[in-house]
Amino acid sequence: MDINSHHSDFLSFKTYANCQLCPRRCGADRSSRPGFCGLNHKLRAARAALHHWEEPALSGPAEGPGGSGTVFFSGCTLRCCFCQNHAISRENFGKEITADALAQIFLNLQSQGAYNINLVTATQFLPHITAALDKVRHKLHIPVVYNSGGYERTQTVKALKDYVDIWLPDFKYFDNRLGIRYSQAGDYFETASEAILQMIEQTGSPVWKAEQTISSPYRSSSAALPLLESGVIIRHLVLPSHKDDSIALLHWIKTHLPEGQYLLSLMSQYTPYGSNKDCPELNRHITTYEYNRVIDTAVSLGLTQGYMQQKSSAGKEYTPPFHLEGL
Image 1 (cartoon, one colour):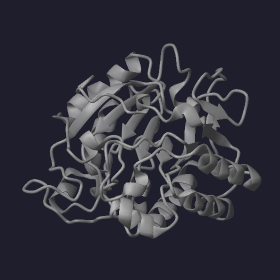
Image 2 (cartoon, helix red, strand yellow):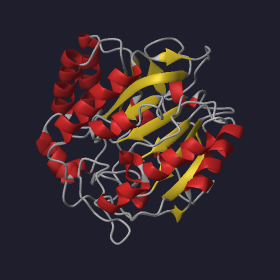
Image 3 (cartoon, helix red, strand yellow):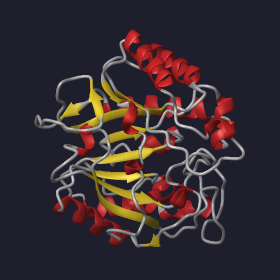
Image 4 (cartoon, helix red, strand yellow):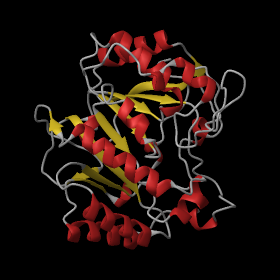
């Protein structure tokens, strides 16, 4: 990881006084009121621990040492009504920590055998996070993963060029009507597609570490994949009732993204939590038929570099407990 010692003004702490970090560009002075993300200017996180249920290229074997060194940050720039991490994304559960404490957390995860540092929903706290990375840049010898909902400003992506090795964006919707209904983001597709193109431009083709046999709930398109050193993994979660939107998105990906420059992770793990009164069509798991239609489309388009979850993967092990572990 090659990190410059100087922040751009865009990532400096003064950004919190007129916040423009995410596409909402709410302009909040977060020292006196929360931004759209729901948080003020004080860094807040809910969990820092090894996680074994990311893609195999990030987590390694499902059983055994290692794992992805995930740090879950409180708040979110989206408002997804189906979020499996709603306790931290909507209710803002977490603990206030300093940038210095976060830097030590990164080193602790590395010493525990983490294969990478996985920043989960980090955009709203980038001044703190980049300061923490600057502090330990000479001691951190594992990749940094940026795990996000895909709803990012290209300016933010560019500012993180020397901080992020692996981009892990969601690509949620093709139809912006779904972006409005489910995430309060009517510009989701345009914003996410531009951000993902920028991520790919910055990283280029995937770069792999030493070979390692993988055991996981994912089916890899190859017999075994090594750990990822740098690159882009695009995630898409298939939603109930919306296989056609997933299929349209796959066609766009095939047409507009450079072949061989990214990995695609198609996920079947959608799990309804409670009763969603506003979006009742989401109050069920996806069917085998829905998921298979999406998988068949990916295969027919040649989008086979990456991961396809088994249908049985819709379980609560993908939602970690938030008890301030590791903070």
